Image 1: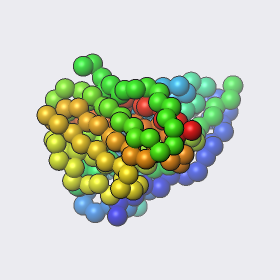
Image 2: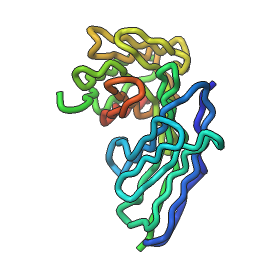
Image 3: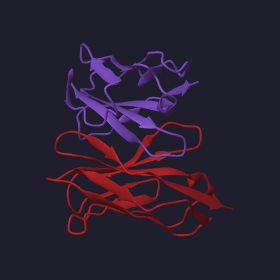
Image 4: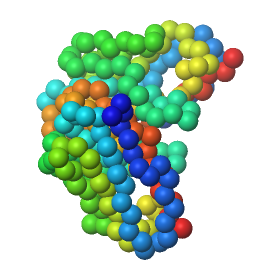
Length: 111
Length: 113
């Protein structure tokens, strides 16, 4: 069945460091891909999305490119801030409509 | 409403009792999803609705779990004969279509004692 795999955390970085959180997926057809973020004490919210191959989603300095050839949707940010500390979830919407999440990656940014 | 509303926000129940969790999605959203999130874990898919139909019930952990949706609006997740391992936060989300942004409620924290 369809699935999403994320790199395990926690990821600990210093402020202004470069961030990559890996995400790969298995799906039939052409899913839409998402990154959701859960800040401490808050609910999940959409960070960015891409709906077809080679699309790049971006928001708040974060980017991710839909790579069909490698079935990946890695999240990147050039310079992280303490306020980016959160749990990040990669997700896909399958061609059956099911919205499937990865296990989540905790990011801790230290000043 | 302005967002996805879940009730109750917290529920403590005794082992063996039945519980009902409610989700009011954003008006006009055709897709509705239920997830379970255990402490420190990811989101475990339970079930989703397209309109009032549930095309995929594969995530329901056992026959003690059931869900329904009426009027393409409110949904209820029912857990019968609760067990301690059912303790978790139950999250509901809705989206306009299945491939668009899902908006999450704040969840119901269920504790089975």
